[in-house]
Image (tube, rainbow, N blue to C red; front, side, top):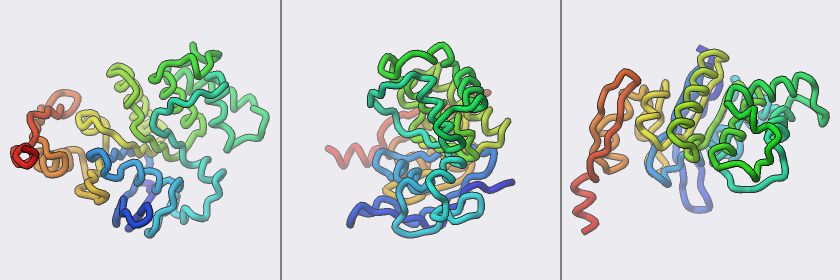
Length: 265
């Protein structure tokens, strides 16, 4: 199995406030790794550290067996595609132009025939080819999110990092995007690292799961070993039931843990 990314003892702080502490993580080719945990647990910060957007205070990160700090921004962008959380910024670009920007790490200022071909292919793959000449400001939040994903795919990255990629999507398009990511991992051996909130979808689509709480890694492993009643109660303070289905386990929240309710009275 080809290892794309390995991080050891990663820590990060804003001033004196420790955000993540001593995190080890890795992503292999063809693997989907999901980072889960409560709000404020450091998931997005960890993701940004792992792909070089926020230098960690301490620790080592290797990308393709090379120290990440030795990559130029252009070199890094040829390997890593990044999809941030849904943005409400309005930019005066058409959908096709916005996605074509994903080819910048591989090309000059003028688009080649291959750049245009890749752009058209990812638009078709994500079902947004009919929006090609629409301006971003005319799109819904879900459509904009798919454009961001398409732009990252246009980079043809070895590793795709996504921060809550389905938060702006309805349930149909959530499944569509996650199925596309799974297909990308299986067919092209792309590594996928993503922050997710939906535990059922993390269980269904992940090969491995990292469970974070208060900046620390609480558990890492298969979905079956990490998304358990004990771990969820400990970290989320919620009692759940797990229901096995043909598509994976469904996580059913039942109630806040009794001791949490008592403490808030």
